[in-house]
Image (cartoon, rainbow, N blue to C red):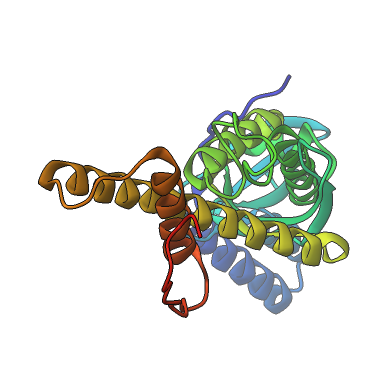
Length: 284
């Protein structure tokens, strides 16, 4: 595979003075009516003009002579090169690829919407120009493929997969690192370096978003109920222990069961409890 090689070029200011000399030669030929001086001057001027090369900051120019890659000029400035070479300019600036939202299934088969932004730049101009057909389009297609592959590797969250160490929702840092590594591997053939890759949009697909929201709400309610019950059991246990230690009242097993039931109802109920005065006894 072809790789980039640096090349140097002659200063363009020297060719500018030669161009002025050629124009002066043409003017003298016209004045003296010498045809060959005019022809030589015009040809020399065209050669100078054709060989001019201007490289802007953070840009490079790949030189191709009769189908053969000659090298890349990375230094910015005004140069003169062989007038027969084809000059192809490649930007070395960092670029943003704001990926479109795509619908894909996660590891558990749930349809989700996901999008990512990729910051990239050209590292090897020869690979970018000659290894792929269109390197900008190549970056776009490979980035979408990498995002799809990433979504298939992990679950959206750990509601269904409680053993999942990394999820798309909660493992943003790890997921971004994995995406960046995969993109660098995919784009290395085109001489592209990925500086950063981040997930910018992540959501369930509209057709299941409502059901997933209800599931999340139910999970939150169950979790809250579990905490309430744990607290209530602890309070009942503490109450029975205090009553026993201070010998305030002696309770048999049936009375303890009734007390536990009443306390749990009071502590775990969603509404305020209306007290009922028992004028009799527990057994009548």
